[in-house]
Image (cartoon, rainbow, N blue to C red; front, top):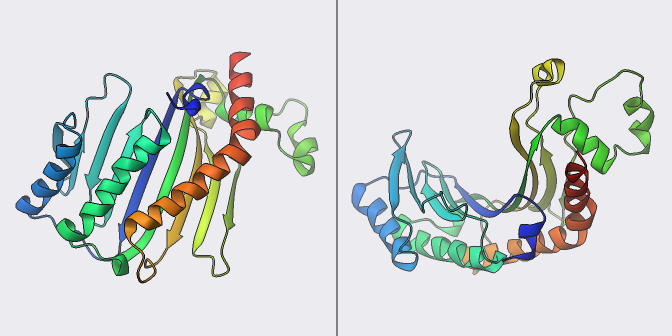
Length: 247
């Protein structure tokens, strides 16, 4: 198993390719695309249509580890939940993006945005926002605010987005998503929901001439993996896991 598996309840690597033009929806084209994916991953057997225009092929989710891919109106998606290694997830994304130009007629010129996401979910029954503030801190500028007597944190989802090139077309974002609302804090009635940490490496606009989708996603994978390893594991994931274990 990937070392990331011990850091959260669920770990996943997703890719989204957003296009300027609509993707094909003809029966033959869609089925051919998914058949090519299934040829590499025969256990992806569940095929269905969602919202009349979004087509999905996925594995059985009962085992807690599964693959999926989707063709939407203007978006091609691929994901692996709890992969054996991050590279195993990348292999699937390479395949999907390699098939997209010849089968779905997607050109690198037609790219609105391409992103690769490392996601980490923690199951927690309680105030997600307060947990984030306790585990990660709120920073010196907000310390006094967080210590107001009798106050309770109801909204705290730290995030930071950085451009890593001069024209700001390549960006990396570290973000959190709490799923607690004010009603739950007021009543003390919390469901066990997922608190998420995301690392997203994204390229905006058309892919550079001579660069394939596969080469572009490999670059984003390296960027995201470096940020996870150097800026997120010890600074965010382990503090969250430790704080949850003490609750």
